[in-house]
Length: 138
Image (cartoon, rainbow, N blue to C red):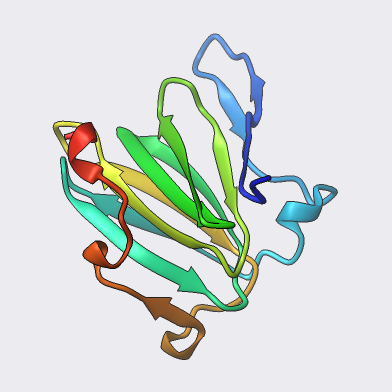
């Protein structure tokens, strides 16, 4: 069973443009948000592999389309997020993950972290260190 999870944020319809409630304090996955940042990923480019010792992430694609892969219990989990079917991906700490841009233009990911980022807190591996076949999504 995967600890990563998808959630559909609440959508408030508005004739001038919809509003999306991204995080609520009462959700245990959203507790203690300390930092948020934006990442960009270009078309067919891969950012992998990362592992946070302490930080859990809530990830939302606000522009474009992105393939996210998590590695949990020796199993790859695949999630595709985009700005059309607005969803939030929760990636708990101690999970290897990576992502690839699927949009011709660059894609934009909004990240919410439950602790402050530091280089000593994150582990990285080379893309070839795990046997996931990214090429079938290119």
